[in-house]
Image (cartoon, rainbow, N blue to C red; front, side, top):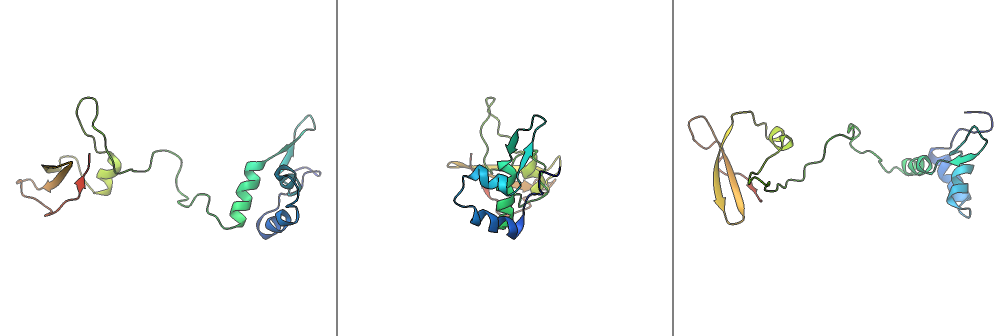
Length: 136
């Protein structure tokens, strides 16, 4: 940071300053807390996103509670849809969670508005007595 751009406030100091400046517009508050940059043409740009993130962090609100997510992939919804070709696909997220391996076999039992999948061993014998229904 240059001499005319102070280090942005964080933690309790930030919360105290925000409280003191509560009568000002949010852009001015963010600027006075150090959340701005000066462009090559000497224009001041307020960094509201960084300011909001810092305020939330100071209040103890976790911005990324899982911490290790890299933004790729989706969270499992535990729902499936029938595809155009009539197939139902169970994604790798679910098969990994169940420790399933290629070649594992299931017995399909149809019910009213549900499908039961019972895992079977190589001899066709059920491995589990009860399985959770998959609602389609």
